[in-house]
Length: 389
Image (cartoon, rainbow, N blue to C red; front, side, top):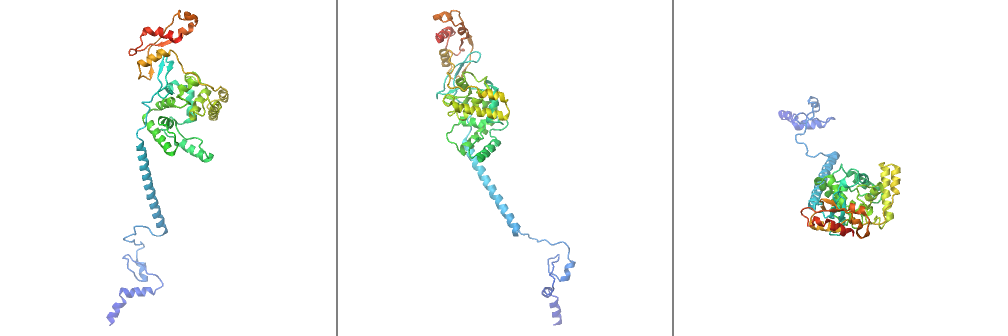
């Protein structure tokens, strides 16, 4: 019995019961076993680590971390789905139209490049082709300052312009500016749509980026100068300048340039020949913004404001129309007929039918066709007499 009692007192169960009576709590040793109260001093100061830690943290901090992980995973899934849907929508648009097959008015020019006659398109529109070199540089100064300040810096879409338009909408409660760049306007002109929605705006932005990847800035400007609406059947700056000012846009005053910048924003409601006051107010608003930007001095702005705004449309040039008709018929696929020219003068012409206008005879320039044309050179004098008498 004594041996049994000795073994019983030294058994692990006895030590555990004895340690429970002590006021101090037992400590774990390096081996992880429970020991007597005095045995804790012999253990290593290093705390033992659990050989199998929990895969997720516990407590309030663990809950926060789990929520953050779930939120991040959900947001990434939403972003991936949104990107996929946007990519599919963009892919459904297809390639952007580049205006390669755009129908423009046929023009007949003399040897100096002066317009003799132009023709409407099959849709009855005056759409004369234009390039940057054919327009007064002052027009572009006003156009970029008013429509697209960073035209040569962005790639079709201007994020700053979008942010400004959104801020103006919030502060004013209405659309003050649309945030469209010139490239986006060209995209809208190439693919006209009546409705205005977020989908249409997104389509214009995508088309603008596509255009910038294929065309140069000058080519995009050329499309804008050719397609910008100016009211009625006038499209492009050349048709507008000839119709409203009676001249090509190579030399424009500040007031004329401001008017040509203002009209495309609302071409039908600002037509000078129908809504003269609205056209003048729109021009003056453009000039006021130029004054705020400090682009022109105050005296020049005031002179531009007192320039008269045209009340009626002028007729398009019509010099030697029959000869031009035959030249166009001889080259039906040509957009701009360029050929050698020749002046036919004769002192006998002013005396025909008692008309004494020698300066007219000397200024008459008739286009002589090239080798592909069907008009004989001998008919040059006859055409001139037919056109003026």
